[in-house]
Image 1 (cartoon, one colour):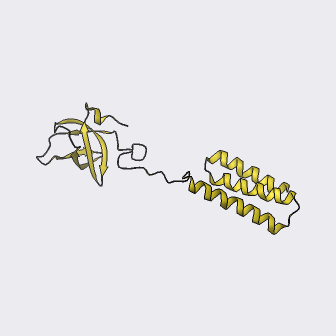
Image 2: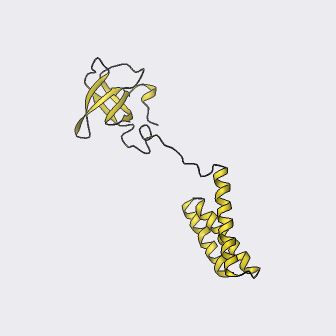
Length: 146
């Protein structure tokens, strides 16, 4: 019984360190195995108790959507893409709303964000579409980094 509960405590400590729900489920399953051992069940029933509690916990978390994958749009998220929020200088815009800018030691294709005026000067990168930078003028509200 003490081995089960000791392992459950270690899993709980790991859960607190990582912040995932998976180790919490493991800790609950191990605790169920410890309770089965305290009730003098055989090793096979201890393992069954551990597995059943772990699987039931996983089903509950999936039904409540706690484990739902959080989708992040990397093209617009400054936490994922470090280019978002950086400043570039646009010398001139083409008629189709594109330009070539010097950024990170190379020429990049850039396009103007929808609804923004095509003015020369400093612009802020608000999105990456493939290898194209999407820009807004530095003074506009839409150009403020998020």
